[in-house]
Length: 637
Image 1: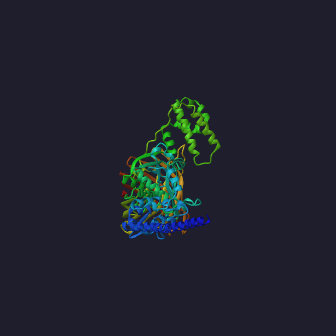
Image 2 (image 1 turned 90 degrees about the vertical axis):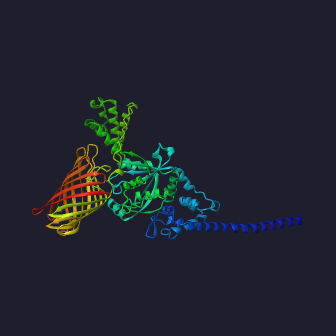
Image 3 (image 1 turned 30 degrees about the horizontal axis):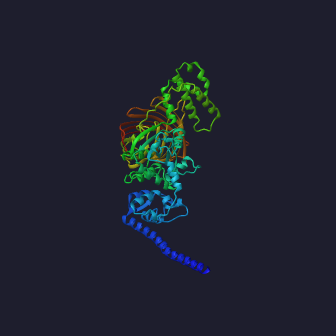
C-alpha cells in the first residue's frame, strides 16, 4: 500500500510539474501577445497620423501657432507624456501605452479617466478589448447616470453691471434629457469660470482676470442653482438656446466633460473665458465645426451665441425673465393708485380691509396681493432672512389662498429684442471735425461694447460698457497724434422708481487730450462717481452724479492732481435715433476748472451702421473757451 501511494504521489508531482511547464510559456506568450498588440496598435495609429486628426486635437485642446502645437489645458494630470502639452503625437502614443496598463485604482485607469479619448481611439483602431485590463469605472458610471443627457441647451444670462465678471453677460450649457422635458430645472448645468480668491475685491478680480491670474475650471451642478443665482439673486434675464446636437454628439460632449473634471485651464476675462471654453466643448461634440477660430482678441458671450447661430446650431430660443423684470412689467400695467396699493400691502396686510382695496374686483385684488408677495420676496432676496418679512409674506400667502384657484393672475412676459440680434461688439469710426479752430480727420476703434447713444435694442437701457476705445486724429496744423485711449468706461443710469432704487454710477479711465493753461496735451486720469436717474416719461431719462477725478497732467501743480465735479444730463431714445445732452465739469485743487456742455445724437440706419453728430463747448479759467464739433460714420462688426 505504501508502494502504491508513493507511486501515485510521484505521478501527481510529475503531472503538476508538467502542467506548470506547459502553462509557463503560455503565460509568457500571453504577456508577449499583449505587448505585441499594444505595439501593433501604436504603429497603426502612427501610420494613420491620428495625432493630426481634428478630433484628437480637439480632445486635447491643442491650438496651432505656425508649426507648433500647444494645449490650452494648464494641468499636468491631463497629460501622460512629459511634453504632452506641446506634443500631440507623444501624448497619443503614451495614451495608448497606458490603455494596456493595469492600475491599482480602477478609476485611474485610462479607460475610466479618459473615456472620450478611448472611445474615439477604439473607433479608429483595431483594438481587441479582450487584451485590455478589465476595469470597473464605477465613479464615471455613477456620474454619467446622474447626468443622463441626450440634448444640449446654451444658456445666456444677460448683462449685469454691478459685477465685473458679468457686465458682458455669461454663457453656460444645460445638459437635458428629452424624457424629462417638463423638468428642465432638474437638468445639469455646465459652467466654466475663474477659481477666484474670495478675498479679492472687484478691482483686483478685474486686473487678475485680464492678466490670466486665475485658473479656470469646469463645474457641473444642478440647473436650478443657476436659476437661483442669475434669475432671482442677480435679477438677470435668461435666454435659452436649444442646440441641434444629436444624442451621439451629446454623449461625446458629456464623456469629454468627465475628462475635464478638476482640470485647470488658463482663464482670461476677455478671450479664454466662460464662452470660449464652451465653444471648445461643442467642437468636440461635432468635429469639423470651427467656432473658436474667429475669436482672437475677445470672446464676448453674446458673440459666441452669434457663432452658434452662424454655424446653424440653434434649433429653438426661449426667454426666462428675471423676477425683477416680471414685477416691473406687471407694475407698468397697473394704474398709479393700484401700484401704491402694492407697496402699502407689502408693508401692512390690513390694507386689504380698506375700501380702496375691497371695491376692486376679485381678479384685481388677487393680482395686487400676488404682486405684493413677489415684491416682498424680491426685497429679501439678498438679505439674511428677516422674521418680520417672513411673517408678512406668510400673511400675504394666506390672503392669496382665500381667492378662487380659478382666478388666473399669471402674466406672460413678452420676450424683448434678442441679444444676439443686437449690434455687434466691435466698432470702427471714421469722422471729420474741428477743435480749437483746427480741422481734423478722426479714426477710431473700440474693442467692445456699447455706448449710451448706440441702438439700445438687445442691450440694457441706460448701460454703457466700453473697453479699449482708441481715437487717432490727423489734425490740419499738427499732424497725426493720439487723441484718446480709454481702457474702461462703464456708465449705469437705471431710473429710480417707488419700487426699485438702483444707484447710478460711472467709472472710466485712460488717456485723453485736455487744454490746460492754453497747452493742449495728453493726460491720464481715473474718474468715478455716483448719483441717481429718473425717467421723466418712457424712454426719456434725467441723471445727475457727483464725481471725483485723479489726473496726471504736467500743467497742474501736483503730479497726481485730485478734482471734484459733477455730471448731469438727459438721455432720450427714439425709434431710430438716440440723443444725449450733458453738462459736466470738475474743479482741481490748484483752482483749475473745466466746464463743458455737449450734445450727441446717433442715427442708426441699420443694426450695424450709424451716423453720429457730436458738439461740445468748454469753458476754462482765464476766460478761455473753445468748441469741438464732429460728424462720424460708425460700423459695428
